Length: 42
Image (cartoon, rainbow, N blue to C red; front, side):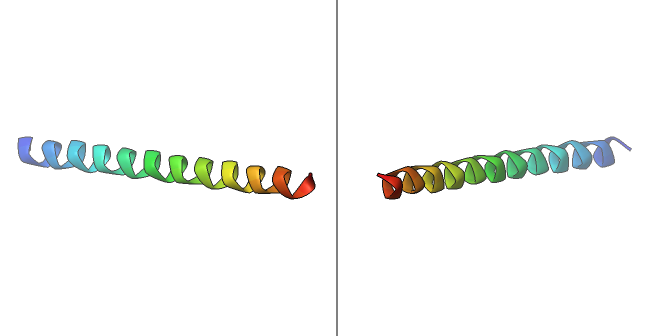
């Protein structure tokens, strides 16, 4: 039982990290799109 719980917490941490990374990547992508959009508008 203890082992099973540990695996669950590790998996949960892993997924949280992955999720954070994806959010950061999406944010960077949108920032770059916005920057290029404003640059082209000038």
